[in-house]
Length: 178
Image (tube, rainbow, N blue to C red):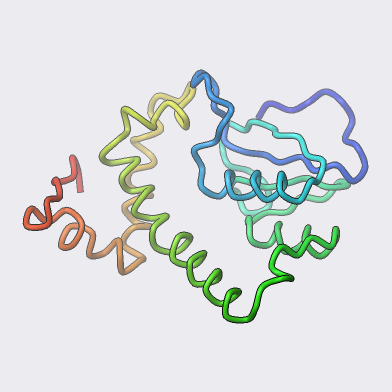
């Protein structure tokens, strides 16, 4: 982890995210890190990004934040906590129907599309995306591929990935490795 030598400021958010060391990009490739960073920008809250090589924090995952000496993990929990603490409800002007639609779209991306994207990253496009996560750990794919495969099998879209998404009859291509 690349930590700052400065003492932590009161009411300042320190967001730990995957390091992009060596990629030449300041953008994160992590869906959940991007979600939290965009939310912080929209909320106008003061924050500092801290690059982290390996997952850590309360759930041993990224992102997580530090705020006033406490650590908070899980993007949804972090956003709920900060929304309440700083009175930042972006849905306050929406109807119940609009809130329900927004929740459905959010769940689709976070619980279904996410796993397809992660699978694609680690099995089909490692040459394109690998540098964003690997950094100095060249053997990272050896550890990640089995974990991604286990997670993939936990979701209906992941279990039927080969039958639906990669079917030659649907114009799909076969994965490098299953």
